[in-house]
Image (tube, rainbow, N blue to C red; front, side, top):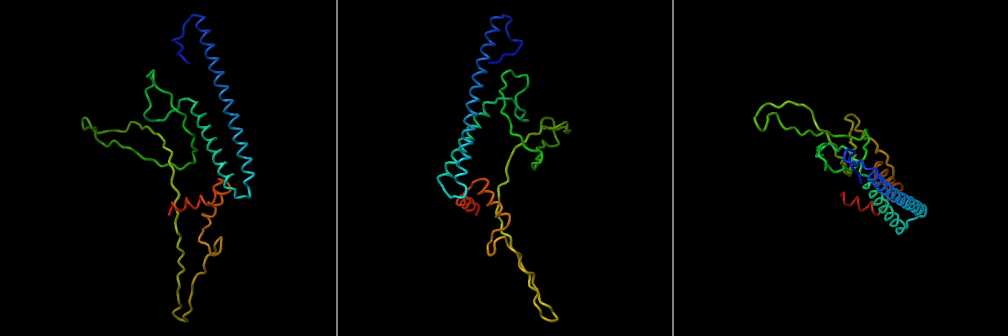
Length: 216
């Protein structure tokens, strides 16, 4: 419950009733947040225990339970975030400040300044669509859209050129570069990705195999 200050009554009894209602609402929200915090802590402890049990083992059952708990934890955190109705500036399609029924906007995730940014300009042109007059720049509205560059596999062809001496007919060729795993096609970047996905992101090898198959 919230009312603008200019709309509040001057009656002390009415004000006391409003204060009591706000206190009850605040207590209810605080209790809900405490329950959410307890669930989050319980889920995190359970996930940590299962990860210790799964370390060094290939138990698919444990890995699936970890995944289910992580999804439940994610859903709970999303639910807590949705309860936070603090307004933000999205930079586009937002209602005017003088509109009394403007809805509260959801909180936008924080993106590091070091994150790669690509600028796309939407230019209305040089002529006014109504009168045909020349347009001049008076400012711009900038909004951000968080997107992802999908991973891409590539094959690096190593061509060792053979050359022969015109004088002595000796064959000259650069030696083959060393590989992280002798006889394997896996390059160092691919191996690093596989290791991080398995031991840090807990993504089993068979699932990585399915992902690589979808990538061709």
